[in-house]
Image (cartoon, rainbow, N blue to C red; front, side):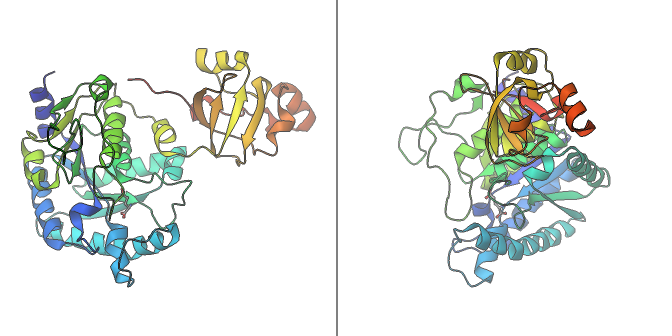
Length: 378
Ligand code: GLU
């Protein structure tokens, strides 16, 4: 596929996720810029009218909320950020609803956390809700559920959240709107840096110096998180466009702007991508070589017999890293036992454990369905 082909796939995608950052929607000192929301919504509505389903992932809750609470700048501590998000999210939803209503479209709010999404039942429920909203012609407005997402369980930035939502709903394209034109091969403010028109795969990123791009004042993402997000999506088979917010109309109608990332991997529906990309491991389980062979080679569940030791203070249900004898992380999974209980079970067969301690000890330490091998390769 050429860059033109991928752009035409994005321009005609039946299902597209559009992500907007805080700095595009809010004023310098915080607070919503309704005019900019209206302009954006006009472009999205035009795309909807041409037959596409659109999911909007919008940041801006914290940046909208803090001035309302009398603060002059974005708070640094998580709790005040959460309070600000609580105030701002309602205003954000109201503005989007108003703007979309003018075009005759209905908005449905969906607030997600990474912790939720790694659990099978929640993942499926969110997936069903989003699909139903789209089938019924509504426009889902997604954000992280900031008021409950603590440091350990947050996705943290909405760029990655948008990529994971795109994967969740099997979108055909992802559009990340930014405050720069796209990805440059060096700092855009510096003379001589050039816009990269297309990224075919990771090799095209080897010589890119990202760092420090983007507006850290009101939002979180910069170009680093956008590239991460584009890689997550493209590895899941979803082509991605990074473009300037002011070019949203062009990006949504013909996609001949910004940097396009080709799809490098196959489409996947697995919730385990959330585990790999959006969870924070709460500890580690270290394996002997036989267990590594079983987990990696045979894709087997992880049993207590092959674990040499554990580290960290995790609870049953938490994400943990699975580490080989050389210290290399080979997988991440949701563990079925607490860190306190697990050491007493190590090296023993599940049959012995079950006979001695009861049937519930027959279960794996990590079930294969809750385990994703790392690193992910396209
Ligand atoms: N969820 C945060 C908000 O709405 C923003 C996260 C981000 O900037 O990526 O304010």
